[in-house]
Amino acid sequence: MSDFETDLTSSDKELQEFLMMEKQKAQVNAQIHEFNEICWEKCIGKPSAKLDSATETCLSNCVDRFIDTSLLITQRFAQILQKHDM
Image (tube, rainbow, N blue to C red):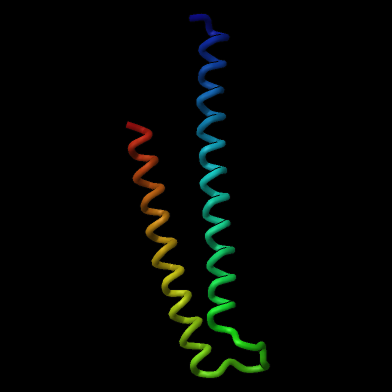
C-alpha cells in the first residue's frame, strides 16, 4: 500500500471516529433537551415568582434522575469506546 493510501485510510478512520463522537454528542444533547421538557411539564404547573415546596421537591427529584441517567449514558459510551479500541 502506498503512503497516500495509508494516509487516506488513516484519515477515513479519523473521520469515522469524529462522526461517531459528534453523533453521540448530539444524542446526549437531545436527551438533555428531553429531560428539561419532562421536568418542566411534570413539575411546573404555572410559573410564579417563587417555587412552592412541592415544586422544589419535584424539580430536585427530576434533576437527580437526570443526573443518574446522564451518568448511565456516559458509562455506556465509555464501554462502547473501550470495546471499539480493542
